[in-house]
Amino acid sequence: MCQLLGMNCNVPTDICFSFTGFRARGGLTDHHRDGWGIAFFEGRGARVFLEPRASADSPVAELVRHYPIRSLNVIAHIRKATQGEIRLENTHPFQRELWGRYWIFAHNGNLVDYLPALSGRFSPVGTTDSERAFCHILDRFAQRFPDAQPAPAELHAILRELAVEIGSHGEFNFLLSDGDRLYAHCASRLSYVIRQAPFPVAHLSDQDLTVDFNLVATPMDRVAVIATTPLTDNETWHTMEPGSLLTFCHGALVSLGENRTLASPGTCIPACNGQSNA
Image (cartoon, rainbow, N blue to C red):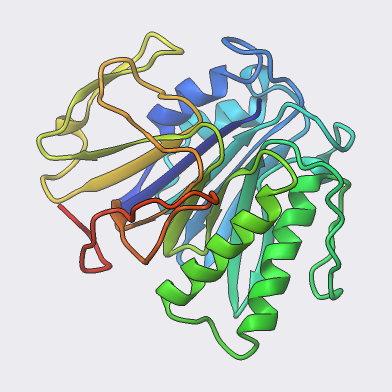
């Protein structure tokens, strides 16, 4: 399966440590060699690096690993192609504009017989089911809220509906961000860790690298890292329940309503004030 990586923070943070382990999964510690990409939000802008080759031996990935780009929200993807040729236009994450801001999306899974009717406002450039799903999501957002971005709870509700609808076609793990919040949908496998004071001394599971976050972070910093499988072997990662949509803001898990995306009833995550949660 493809590999997803997301980061959401309360202060601009670099992802060099996590990306070092994540990058190795693209051809070194795992067999995914069909492309990789990473997107960083910087203010209202988004910096995106894409390459249709293995990340483990990519010079661009090496540049990203050493260049401490600081961001509040990051999404990265390592591709194992199921639909669409190994080409730049089929490489995740994908980027589009809606409501005067950029949206970034990456998907892990395979959607079968999935040909949504699109209005034409958002059209796929490549030939992946993933990009079609992204265009479908934004199309539905724009149709439901044509004038402006709605309140977070309203957006979460429609995204949950779409996760159920699109997920009926197959495996639909995804990460989506508008630069303020990061939405993570688990269809089969996603985990997360929230790092805050007192910070751990973390060791990567895919590379022999250790970082003491107490030396590089302040006591007020908080960082949520989401990945297909845990990136470190000495931290407590939380396994997301299949069929759940979680929202991260300011490095914390926040409640915006019902988060289950399966037919069976479930419970919401504990409520908080909709901002950060120490």
